[in-house]
Length: 263
Image 1 (tube, rainbow, N blue to C red):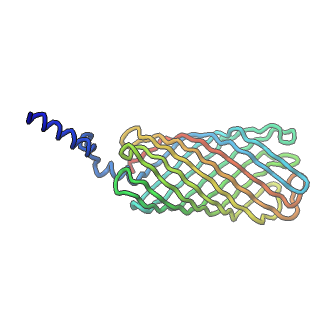
Image 2: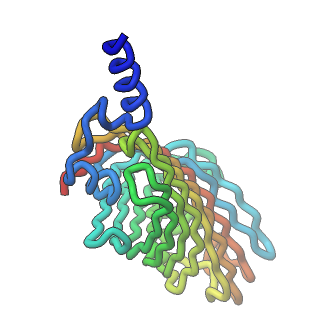
Image 3: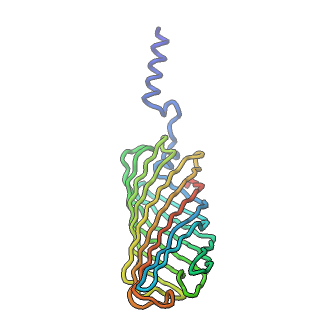
């Protein structure tokens, strides 16, 4: 009878404190699970649409798939303050039907900046809320056409974001959802242009699902949507001469990363 009571008591203690059954996290493991630092390398594919409207021309061009090489990093010197960087480099694709032409196109994008976050709970499964501020840059490279519908473009501007991170499975896996707003201040087009930039804005959303593969490695699935609208005044040399144009770009990037977290 005493033996039965002892076994029942031990079982109740293990249920109330699961870490006693699986072994408590070491300080290093808890640091990784809470801070979630990491360097990630992966591959992905980017699709999207490019829309152009002016007083004389309307154009809608779809991009089926541009393969991408992806690199990302998160460093957290403190539990609350961190720095991030993201880079995607396309390997190029061809678009058919651009005013009867086949045109080569490629894209490159990068973001970097700082983040600040708050934890709702001081453990490895504490939800984190955060904000970020940084720089967002995008470059589009297109083969020259006549008339020129797709242009080489370089767009840079500040970006503000908010995010929430949901960890589970003792912090080994997590889901992070981010929303951002962009305000491009630099727009350069060549060899032709859409006119004098007069107003522009962008926005986006990103979801990241991470699953631990070992103590220091994880696989990360990322889905990133971005949109950008640029308004132009005055005459343009684009499309054999137009005026008062507007461009709207929409991109969806899906990637799979290998993430190393022992930093």
